[in-house]
Amino acid sequence: MPSDGKLPVALVTGFLGSGKTTLIGGLLGHHAMGETAVIVNELGEIGIDHHLLRRVDERTVLLKSGCLCCTLRGDLAEELRDLLGRRDRGEIPLFKRVVVETTGLADPAPVVYTLLAEPVVKHHYELESVITTVDAQHGLVRDESLRQVAAADTLVVTKTDLAPESGLAARLAVLNPAARIIEASFGAVSPDDVLTPSPHPRETGSGDAPAYGHGDVRAVTVVLDDALDWAAFGIWLTMLLQARGSEIYRVKGLLDVGQDGPVLLNGVQHVVHPPVHLDAWPDDDRRSRLVFIGAGLDREALRRSLEAFSRAAP
Amino acid sequence: MEEHWAEDGGRRGRLSRVRLANRVLDHFGLRLDDWGCRTYVLRDRKGRSAVVANLGEVWVEAERLAGRQLDPLDPELVTALAL
Image (cartoon, rainbow over all chains, first blue to last red; front, side, top):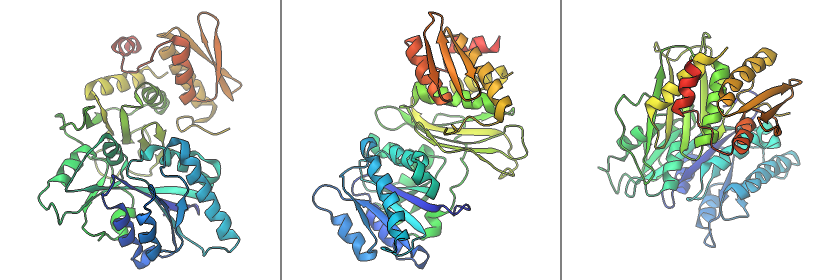
């Protein structure tokens, strides 16, 4: 829960038919999820999602457009601003949290960007968690689902009743070492499972993890023994994201910048959250570790380059 | 002005960022100057220039002025930085 009075926003993403609405329905059934506003995206003319959600929560707001992509993220900002206005005018009850459901084909990055960059939205809301549902029966189907998996703080493997031996959770743990992974059928999850802060990135080991999709998508972890120069890191990462932003789906890391605690860094594609300076390290390992998820990533090239930038700092 | 995520550390941080950015940009024939601690000016050797607000924009404009992608993983750049 954000400490500065901002309203937490949970983003629920996942491919078509992967159980997003069921998950949200399950979450909203918990007492702790009372006073939640839900923004869903009605896909096409069917609008089943909308009706399902309305039974659970009358405060659902429908986006007017069919897809949350770059050009339409203004809709999300508008809906989030409108929620505040209607609340302040007493037209809707007070709410303590917002859940945003994206369409199955949505790239989560523009939605994350909207929450981090739109001036009014970022003043009142804080992205709490990105939750991605993945269907155990169909798994990782397309590039969109790889981007959604990479963006996740929590991955929920759904429909495990239909495919109990899929092994999907283990594959997802390799693909996104920065995420918590849980299995759930019929939306049976507790808010604590998906809305608490995600764990710190796990190391992926020194070998190459299996790759997915046409673009050879995999996670690589860069571990550095020496403290990093923070200014150099900022220059390096902004340059890297400009040059290779379309190939980097996610970056998450704990950085030793020569202070008592590490800096927590989290970015989805080209969108980087404000870095958080932590008071203390979570464990005895005080080396910087950065997880990248993306296409065609070369761990050694990343490490050599970052070290060269850091050492070149004045 | 919006603060970019990589731009903290006050004036001292800004100076060290400009200094290091210039070691990188020099490799591509470009130079960055701080303009009153509010914005930056990026120049190439042909006298063309661009005003940029933050580090993120530096690389967008640098790519345009250089006419090519500026890749931090470029082995020649990595070697040059180690000298």
